[in-house]
Image (cartoon, rainbow, N blue to C red; front, side, top):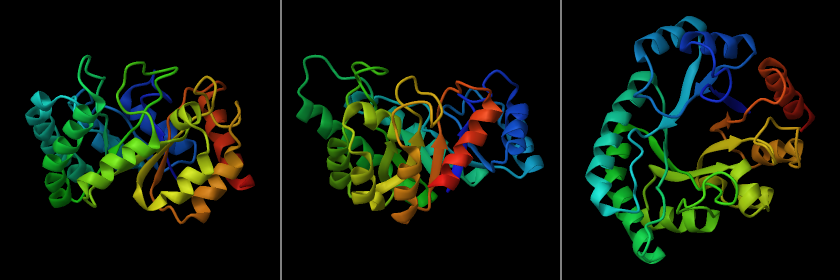
Amino acid sequence: MNFSVCIDMIYSGLPLAERVAQVKAAGYDAVEFWRWRDKDLDALEQALQQHGVQLAGFCVDPMGRLVDPATHDEFVEGVKASVQQAQRFGTNALIVTVGQEREGVSRDEQREAIIAGLRRAAPVAEEGGVVLCVEPLNVLVDHKGYFLSTTDEALQIIDAVNSPAVKLLYDVYHQQITEGNLIARITQHIDKIGHIHIADVPGRHEPGTGEINYANVFKAIADAGYEGYVGLEFRPKADARVALENVRKLEEAS
C-alpha cells in the first residue's frame, strides 16, 4: 500500500520541514496537503529532498466553485498554476472540489457547469501529466451545502468529461457517512479512482478507532490492483506516531 500522510491534519502544529521529518521518522515516504499557496515551497522542497519523501498530492489552488460558470476562468488558471507546482515536485494527483450548492439553481444546471469547467481544465492536466481527482464530500457531518456527495453522481460527471486526466477521489470516511457499501464501490470503480483518502467514522480519527473494518478495506484495495496513493487524512486520536504505527498494523493484518 502506498500511503501518504496529510500534513495539514497530522503533525499540523509543527513547522513544515519538521512535519516532513516526523513523517519519515514514522516510516512513511510520502506526504500530501491541501493548499500550496500558503506553504513555503522552497523549504518544503528542501525537506522532501533531505528526507527522501515524495509529495503525493495537493489541491488545485484556488479551489474554485465549479458549480458556477462565472468562476471557470479562475479555476482553469488555478489548474495551470497548480500543474506547474505538481511538475516541480513530481506530483501527479491534484485534488478538485466543486463548491457549495447554488441556491435557486437546478442540480442539472450545476452538474453541467462542473462538467464544462472540468472539460476546459482537462487538456491542461493531460498536457502536464497530472490527474484531476474530483472529490465528493459528506454533507451530513462535515460539509453541509456542498454540491457533490455521492459516488454515482461524481462518476456521472467524470464519464461525461471523458478524459484520462479526470478521475475520482474516493474518500472512505466521507463515503461511509454518505452511502456505505465501501468495498463494492471501491472494487467496482477502481479504474476510475485516482486517489484515496481514509479516516474512521465517527470522529474522523485514525483507522481502528471507529466502525470501519480497515483490514478488509485495505485488502480489497490491494486485491483490486490499485497502485495510487492512499492518503491518511485523519485527526489522530492517539499520539500521531502511535496512530501511524497502528495504520501499518492494520495493513499487515489485511
